Image (cartoon, rainbow, N blue to C red; front, side, top):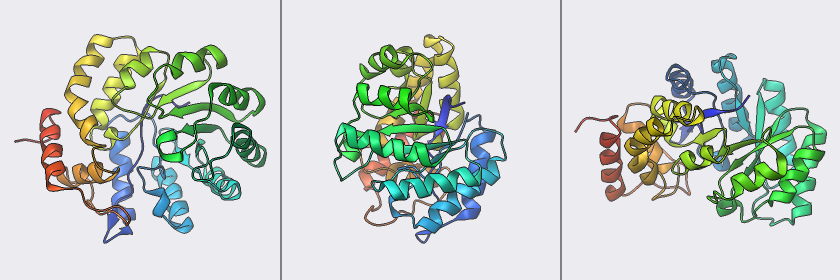
Length: 293
């Protein structure tokens, strides 16, 4: 169900308020450009600063605009298990194809605590669940063993968005959980190697502004055409890099503004990117063939 290029969608703002009209256009453009699915209300969508009402509105709007053309993997995570269940329940009712659920941040639960968190969501809502493992933001790292336990004991858990940056995790998880366990990269820069190790695609930040290139890259790499994939990767490498030299989604929203896709508006505590980063972003977009000199 979930494979290939899955953009972690930005949430367009106008004067720091959600711009639903721009979001609708953006979702349709993503599908027209060849994205294999969409992921609203993740980190790139600034979910930490969306109200519950805005979170639900963005999720529902995305599902309505997609209209079944590609799968929708809705961001539903929280460090509060009750809140995660509530968001996942809404996503299910709204018609999402799956829920992306981050490991509980800030609380620093044990491996058993993480398992019980996902078990509670699994038992409360009947929807496919992708675990989002991102130690750099959540400060906890779900182990291969705990992830395999979730997969084998919890019927709704079907895969992981792996943002550990540790490529050794892919074959280790594959050996533990088998090839049916969906492994999606959370890092554009390492997506080629990730797929070579048995990954099924990438939940991509770069795809927000380069959806066709990222989709073509994923198609080539998943078909085993690593020469073609590497050619596209070379065009995108500078862009992948600049996306995270300042807090995301600052750089990608600025790129979106340059390409006429959205405003570069962010909500505090995020602030506009520096002039130095803006210059690097312009250069990266030119290298990728997305912007003229």
